[in-house]
Structure formats: C-alpha cells, structure tokens
View 1 (cartoon, rainbow, N blue to C red):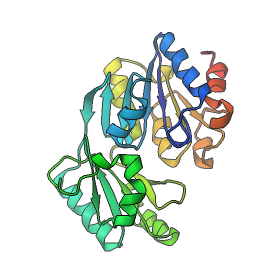
View 2 (view 1 turned 135 degrees about the vertical axis):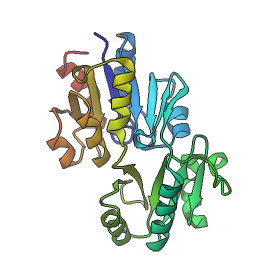
View 3 (view 1 turned 45 degrees about the vertical axis):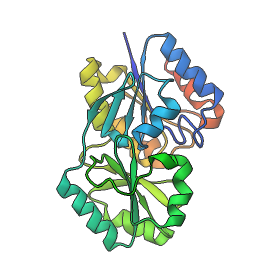
Length: 254
C-alpha cells in the first residue's frame, strides 16, 4: 500500500537550509520504496522548490496555501483583497512589518533597509520586489523589533494566525487558522486517494500541530516544542541524531 510522508523543513528536515546525511538517506529510502514525499512548510514556494524540489514528490508551502506536485503548481489559496487590507492595517497599527509571498517573489511591507538586508540571502535578492501590489499573496512573515513586540503580535493575532517564531531573530511565519498545513495535507490525501492511516507527518514547531490533525502518524522530533510532543503518536530523536530514520525504523518502514 502506497504511503505519503510530510516533512517540515526547519528543525525537522533541515538545519539552516542544510539537510543532514541521515535525512537524505531517509528521503531516498522512501523514494525507492515508491512512497510519496512532500515538504510541508511555511516557507515560500520558490525557496522550498529551489532547495528541496528535486528530493521529494512535491511541496506544501505557505503553511498549506500553495501546493506543488512534480514541479508544477497543483493548488493555491490566495488571500482575498479584503483579507490583505485587514492584515496591512493591523500590521501598521502595531508598528510591525511583513514580507508577503507570491508565486515567484516576495514583497516587503513596512520593512526598513536593515531588515531587508538581513533576509535577502534567504529569499534571494532577485526575488524581493517593492512594487508588486496586484500579485496574489499566499502567506506572509511578520517582522518585529523586540521580543515584547513579538509577544504583543502573537496576542493580537491570536484568533486568526498561528505565529511560529524563527528563533527570536526578528521574524516569524504565519499560519492562517482558516487554512493551514493540515488543510493542505487533507487536499493531497483526497487527491491521491490515501487514507489517514497511510499518512505520516514529521514536525517540530507550533504550526506543525495542524499536520498531526490530518494524519494517522504524527511524529515529533526530539527537539520539538512540548505542545507538539503532546499531540504526537511517536516522539523520535532530534534532527541531528537521525530522528527521521529512527522513526521510520520504529514504524517498520526502514
């Protein structure tokens, strides 16, 4: 029976964009066995495609709102104009900033030169555009000036977004409560006619709770946040200790 596997990137599959050797081995093993493998991330489509597209069957990006299969866009749920207006106004009201993500580019909103300089390597300077207001947007990263402001933003968006901090370094990705990683997974399970019991998700962060909601096997990394571990069907070792391979062995797959 064909199975499907979903992997968060940061802290699960990769460390600062680099995939440990054990995780590469795990992806190759699943590929050789004929299973489907998907990245499931809050990152931009072009970021995930560039670094990981040739290693997996496809990508769930933008925290569920943009799906790629075999290198081509399969699904996209862009923000409505009224949703964008709401986010623009609220971000401005809290003196914060954001980077809105479209299919091929990222557009800064109320970011200063220092903030843009700090992230140009991650996004790719050629991908950052300042005059693209009519593009469809699928997600955004929030940018804050200090931890107090970050916590204020988390509280202010509590009913609308799951905010996943990037390690206290001034930004965080945002998962919409109305459509998240779990909804992206549910779309693919229906698309491929695969039931939950043959679906596996690996994660470490707050936004990965949505993944576990839609699969039969929710596997938390040893370095995962406590709330995710509480919802896991299995807790494996950390990312730098071959946690994914060990979990596959535990599940009888490797």
